[in-house]
Image 1 (tube, one colour):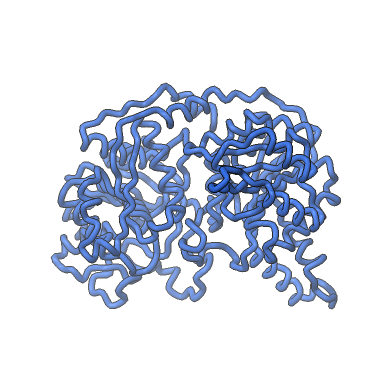
Image 2: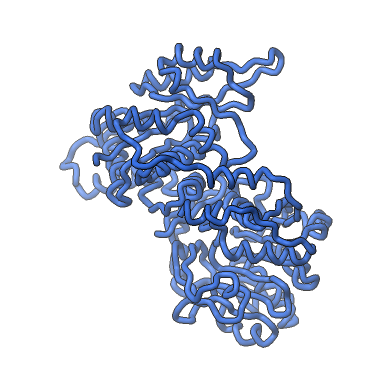
Length: 551
């Protein structure tokens, strides 16, 4: 079958929900028997988000092949339950770097290099790589930002040209906009959507569907108005009201008959009847009132929750499987260093210390690990959180507060965490860490082995520093177990504390592989320890078969 393309653009405001919309549409199409993939086009000049502050761009989501990507790819993977590759995230930086590289080699035979056709051709080439790399029959392509952004223009022009390149029957354009609410008059306004569509049409793209996001119900009159002024069919105006349950969005689109409309416009027939019964049970379980436990997430970017998007979702997935609600208490580690915020840590039933970079707030996280160790509070350290757990225990075991990572103190006499040997001569920051999927050999009779119920696992990494093997024996003698190692035994991948109900850290990022209906085993084990501490018992709903359905 000829590859079909669905292009999603955004209007009125950024962060309107294009990523979740694209992910949900991908789920609709997969339910109908099609092989789907999704690509994000990001207009910024960075080659990837790997060197960007989480305050700028939220979390960096890492793929199996080591690509550092936009957090929307996490939505795509979680909703559709697929594994994406580096061709699924394209930035302006990547495009220009490739074109300039070709120009320097003389590939253009002395021609003048211009945005059209050279930049747009490179964008189209990269769009075409998705189906070749993944075998996808339908490729959804989301453009970051909003229509009207100057940096988006080359991408929009490339998308305009795609309709001629692949044919109208193989391309479809969806515009996701925002309907603002005027409190003084109690009205939703469509005028910004009309202006956004007019801007899009001036570029040469006429949307085939408009998804109208709103915090309030959208009545028929407003939908008629959008259809009339934006020149789309009435049934192609899809209201999407904000929901507290993220995973309800696919069913909202299903109810609006979006899947049927898309297949009809692309000349396709569903290969199977979509069955949402198990997904409905999943959403119903999320909405069900459940006993609540509190988990403190101690980080340095907690003001922006998107910086820990995958961690937050992985906690929700595990909580769903155990039939409990988890209230995440966001604690800024820098505040703990000043003696503030400890009441939030002390009142929590478990602690998660996620990944991060830089020395700010580090001592606050180390103090958190000490509190968890001394008070037998379940502790789960992710990447940096594992390294700080090691530093804290080293200070205790060695009797010296100078034990540290060379990331934070290059002159420490006890470098228990140190730069990997193959990282020492690297000058560039971007794309040079240990990235992507690596195997981990689990050690018998450990918390990790019990959680995974298998001997060898593969997990996604994103780090530059490692456990220093020179301190393996002294820390092991003091009570640390190395429950996960690289297959050659050289690298410590998982460390855990003996004589503790659950104090475990991973050098990798397990949150990237968690799914709403297939929670990660380590998050499950952590929450089980939290429940045991509070005296609660797991109360899972009857949704076991969801796993088999959505794999």
